[in-house]
Image (cartoon, rainbow, N blue to C red; front, side, top):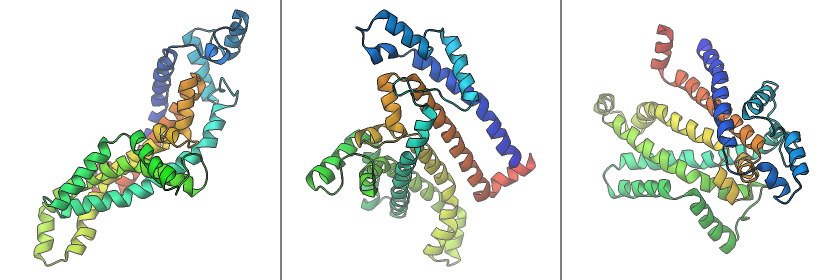
Length: 310
């Protein structure tokens, strides 16, 4: 297991280099000039040229890329074109808010999604199953910005139960967490239903029922234990994507996290901010996937057997 972890962490280095090269190339290909966005098109050419020299954008793309890789090796992501603050410091400042939002969404999504998926599987081909399946499809189909605006309109503007936007205590967290959790609830419901139906048809479940074991024990001791393995993948991927910053949700609700920070960087063409957020997001996603693999190691004996046989 230790060898496997070291190998995965070692592969993170070429992955990051590939991500930085691709991101840097695509970022530079964006239309517009960040310097002109900062000073305006009517600024004197001398001023524009001076700012470009200060930012290093007067060099060729290859030289700029090598300079950025050099900064990464020092553990830095450059400075924002607009605030002149270190991008990494701003990411560290905003990450706790994104973590709160991600945890809030998963706290809602996991129990609700598992419960609805279990009910749907247990009541297979009944009206209850059809209603839950229809709701899950609706949850996947609704755009996040639309459901967020509806929640804001109803609970904030009409009922005045929660603040419409901003970053603060738990009252500010509830609506964006619900908005972010809706797609995850729909996905978990469908995956849980499909997985449980497959397990219910397996011979060991029929054997357990033939022995007179109660349905409660069958579900909690046999069925859920086997169903949890694919569910870990879904939960891990959702949590990893939320930690990268839910751009639309954070922007709609004015939540001061990494997603909103990334969006502001894109709008302003603040290349160091865009690059820093994407690279940190890549690291987070890879580490979350690594954590999922570690959990697999302890949940599934077949994984341990495969590792020992290598």
